[in-house]
Amino acid sequence: MDTKSSALIVMAAGMGSRFGGLKQMEPLGPHGEVILDYSVYDAMEAGFDKIVFVIKKAIEKDFRELVGKKFESKVDVSYTFQELDDLPKGFTLPEGRVKPWGTGHAVLTAKDIVKTPFAIVNADDYYGKSAYKLIHDYLLEKNEMCMAGYLLGNTISDNGTVARGVCKMSDGYLDEIIETTAIDKNSGIPLDTLVSMNMWGLLPDFFAKLEEGFVDFLKTNTDPLKGEFFIPKFIDHLIHNEGAKVKVLPANEKWYGVTYKEDSDLVKAAFKKFDEDGLYPGLK
Image 1 (cartoon, rainbow, N blue to C red):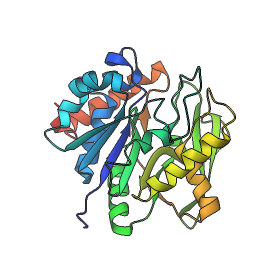
Image 2 (image 1 turned 30 degrees about the horizontal axis):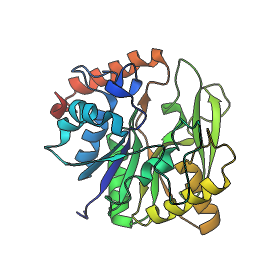
Image 3 (image 1 turned 90 degrees about the horizontal axis):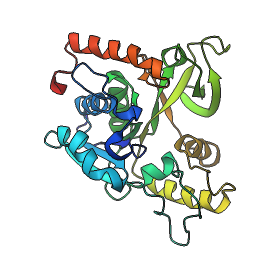
Image 4 (image 1 turned 90 degrees about the vertical axis):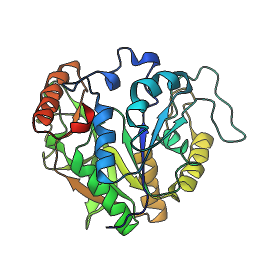
């Protein structure tokens, strides 16, 4: 297998100071693990040799203490900062804007430190071991953009509806992502439909395109207080306007997350079983 370097960008800027009351840092594992711990562990096991945490400067000290120090001795760890006023030349922060600029802006913060193929994930989603391996190996062997596609039935909650990016494909490649809300098991969408959970495999030249895309977004954004620059929407733009190819890699594992407070018990039970099966010995 190709042994070239690869990075994982973890979007964690949504966490607040000391992470009080935020689902991203709720202990769900039997030894106090949070979802993010499992994600980094799985990425390292799959072969990613650089981890980049996208956070806010206001939480850097706390984040390094509570998360970063667990991994800094095991893998190359870097931090980048997603700040509201970090805008391209010629743009200023709209008065009254408090909402982050979106996942596209978060990924852009890593453009100067990531020079290899890379994956991106949300800090509060458990993607499963196989997804990291699929993305890592495809990136390095094919040198082509890709995404993990999850069976809808493996990503819905018993405690309420969810929003998912429904994938339309041809010959295993992404044609379109249709952002769909209010989904449950009775929505009429086949449960074996592949959906996006915002786990992408990307190449270094993506940053230059993303930078241009963010400028275009700022020029045309009609909602200066709430408009967001999203990765799926931008990739959809690249597919339709630049002929970009994105391979969809089916991931058969169950996704775990805490969309609703009641989801916590299910996630805790799953992580307890992982522990009993010895899948995460390095987290104890």
